[in-house]
Image 1 (cartoon, one colour):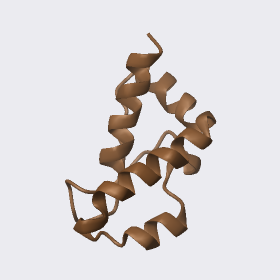
Image 2 (tube, rainbow, N blue to C red):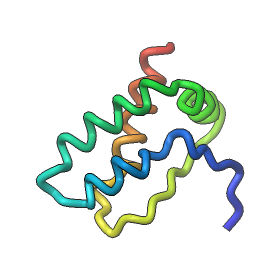
Image 3 (spheres, helix red, strand yellow):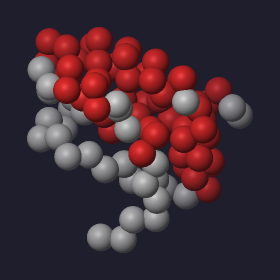
Image 4 (cartoon, rainbow, N blue to C red):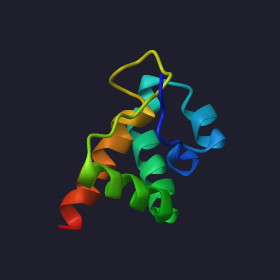
Length: 86
């Protein structure tokens, strides 16, 4: 697969991923914690938002759960940032 970019800084921290452990009961808090991490380092989000303004962006994830994973949160966050910056 061809990948145009890897923005490591928009991935959840290793500590947060380990804490979450894909436990459904931690999903709500995971979202809050991950959004806090994203807000603390806007540089990566800026790159992603800019890319999304110009072309479709595909977010990759390795979790088996298609409804509760970091890409779901990241997608929502990027969409919010797109709207807030218009």
